[in-house]
Structure formats: structure tokens, C-alpha cells
Length: 426
Ligand SMILES: *Cc1c(COP(=O)(O)O)cnc(C)c1O
Image 1 (tube, rainbow, N blue to C red):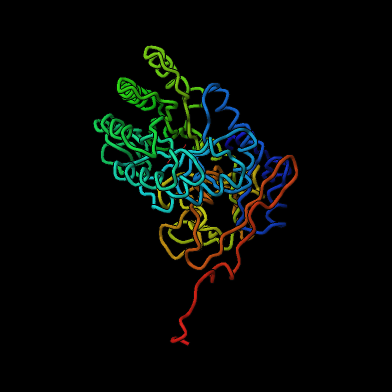
Image 2: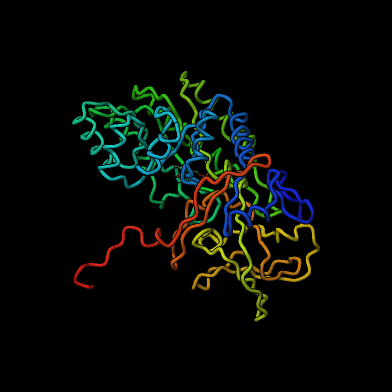
């Protein structure tokens, strides 16, 4: 038997989340169903705040951008890292103050820059090209926008290549050796005011030494920028802290993350005689382990492998297909039963890669069973699609035995959406 994370438990052989029986949730709301534990989000956010008591925590909205989740975090005092106008709009709607929002992105449209100027949020500028565009847009509006530059620090985060974002060859940011001249140029332009510096080296990072390396490199740059006479108000170190998806995996905690960054940050800012605000942008850590995806077994088939066909596919949780990632699978209505056989859990999508879990020892699986995929809160629903003509599923928020729908299930009407058949084809 594996050990459940402490916000999940087993009662009458059923998996229970925050006091709610998952089988009752599946009956009431239908499957597939995302279920998020509200208290767990608050706990995770608090852990970050405790580890970095003097820093601002900007939640990375792309990890899970549901309005209710953004709202909960807004009430906890979180800021937001947004990567599109859509995320900016949702963060503001949820009540995250504009002073605590950083608009990131490596390829922003002029419209997005215009919206950043209108709302007055800070912008993380990814290139000199963008710097000039933003300067022009801001001048037309008669405003001055506070900016940071996104730095490519050339640090290997030792994680999956698709989520390494600070390698020399990655598309994000300005190469470290061009950063100082970018600040020099920016300080001579109207409409923008360079007042921060930003990096983000990757995601699902399980070894904290790259964070220390990145902090050193960033503080080298901070020193040079300070020499230019630019007073930096903030240093945003991004995030990327990993979580343990596998039982045997040990993952660093926010405290470990702080131990990797804070000593260097404190010592070097002190030596420079400056006191910029430190900003962190955790996404996965805040929401990853808070959410399960419930999916119903449609078929069990003995072929080359024992295949379990479920009603969720990679349209709802793409991580296993896209990043070869691992999610624990629990037969939620047999959660306390002994494992008996090896199963491969596959979705209903017409793609060989639509497999959630390979060769897992589970209790005997039958049609109608409910399988819970654990740790599905980060980059789960937020990366969902309607591929293969599948409306997206509902999301429920639970807290101490109470459940609320935070996103209704899509229907066929949502598949048709804004499509139109031209008159001449009728
Ligand atoms: C995705 C992203 C984050 C969050 O990364 P996690 O691995 O989810 O913590 C933070 N900052 C930026 C700029 C990002 O793109």
C-alpha cells in the first residue's frame, strides 16, 4: 500500500478528499471530474510565505487559472505572474491588485502591451524589440510603465527539456551578457522605467542548486545595473520548485528553496547597499498536489497488456503524454484493497500516446470503477482541450465536507462554439 498525501484519506474503502467521498462526488457531478482541496491550496501558499517572509509571492496563473482559485489566492495576499492578456484579465477579475501583477511573455502582441499600459501593471520585457514597442505605446498614452527585463541566465535546471526555460538556447529572455546594455538603453527611453529584473529557469526542479546558481548570476547583473545608477525596486527569481509525483521521489520544500536563494540574495544586496523586494512566482507547488482527476472505467481488456479504458483522456490531463510524467493512480472505490494485477490506464482518444499510467499494480479493476489520478492540479485543466470532440469536464472545489462547482461541464454547444458553416456550403 502506498501512503496517501495527508489531505487524502481512506474511509469505507473509498478515497476521501477534504471530508468528501470521491465516489459520491463522481455520482453527483459525473465524470471526468477535477476535484480541488481548498485548504491544501491555502496550506501550500502559507508554506511559501513562511519560507520567504519578506518576499512577495506572485502565483503563476498558468498552472491553474480557475477564477475561484485565483480568488482564494487573492484573498491570501498573493500577486500574479500572468503570461497573456487573458490571464491578466482573469487575475484582475479575481481581485489580485494590479500593483502585484507582472505581465510576462516572450511574444506579446501590441494589443497586450496596450492593455498592460492601460491597466498599469509592471511588464517583464523579453527583448529590445519589445522594449521599443512598449516605450512607444506608453508614450502615446502619456504613461510611464515600470519594467523588468527577463534575463536568460544560462542555468541548467536539470529537469525535463520541455520545461527548461533558462538554458542558453531557450526562447525566453535576454542573454545575460546583453542585459546591462539593455538597461542602459531603457533608462534613456520615455514611457518605460526599468525598475526590476526577472528570471525563471524551469519547472519541476527537484535539486535546488540551480536556484543558487541563478541567484548568483542575477546578483552579478544587479550589481552592474546598480553601477549604472539604476535603482532596482525588485528582483524576481521566478520559481519552478518541483513536487514529488512518485512515492519514492523526494522533493525540496519552500524552505529548501529559500535556503538556496536567501543567503545569497541577502548578502549581495547588503554588500551593494540596496534593498530591492524579492519576488517568487510559484505555480506547481501551490496547486499541484491539491487536485485529483476522477475518471470512470468504461472497459477492461486483456491484450498484450491489461488495458483499463477510462473516460478522461489527454485532452484533460496532457502531462503524461507531453512530458512522460507520472501520476499516482488509485482505484477510488477500492482505495484500501490490496493490489492484485498490473494494469495500463488509457484514455478514449484516438492516439497511442493517450495513456495515463503504465503497468501499475492495482486492486482488480472492473467496468464502473472510479480511478483517481493524483497531483493533477498544476498544468492539468489549464492545458485542457476539446480534442477528439470532447467537451471539457467540470471542476469542483471541496472544503471540509462541502463541495462547490467552480467550472461547469461543457456540452455539445461548447464544441460548436463560434463555428459557422458558410452559406455557400448549405
Ligand atoms: C510557468 C512559470 C512560473 C511557474 O513555474 P512553476 O514550475 O509552476 O512553479 C513562474 N514564472 C514564470 C515566468 C513562468 O513562466
